[in-house]
Amino acid sequence: FLQELPEYLITTETGVPCLFSHYIFPDLTGSTTQYIERNNQMKKHWAFMNSNNLHLSFIGHSHNHFPGFAYNNNSSFFRAFHSLPQDNFQIGQEPVVIMLPPLSGEKGRTGFSIIDTDTMKLTIITLTTK
Image 1 (cartoon, rainbow, N blue to C red):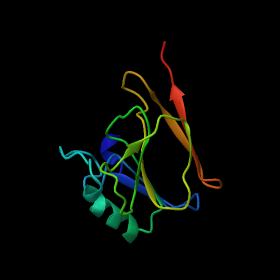
Image 2: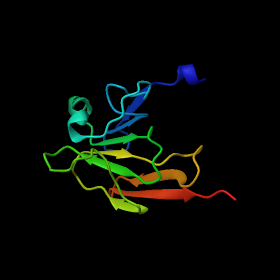
Image 3: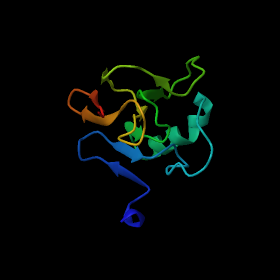
Image 4: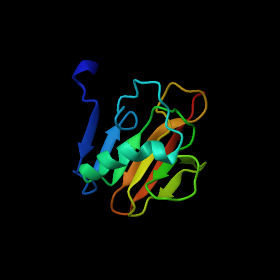
């Protein structure tokens, strides 16, 4: 089953072109040991998004407990992803890479996400284990 799955998925069904992958282009599977930490390490991913006219990119791989956001701008931010400890986000119209919390397998915060492409609101649904 797993061998039949694509390494990434680009979808436009919602009217908002999205990339779903495990990690950052060119390592969409996350199989290398490179970990993206700075804005300049995102250049190839932004180029991939631009060449495919993508607005949103959803990734995992880091298993952070909070979602992280990366924007393609020349700001003075040192880190590529900025984690925010909340559950609801207005995404806006600027292209963004969103690193989501894990669905399972981690101690602490796990869950899933819902994006309303009409309002561009991202909601993180936290799962708790007992």
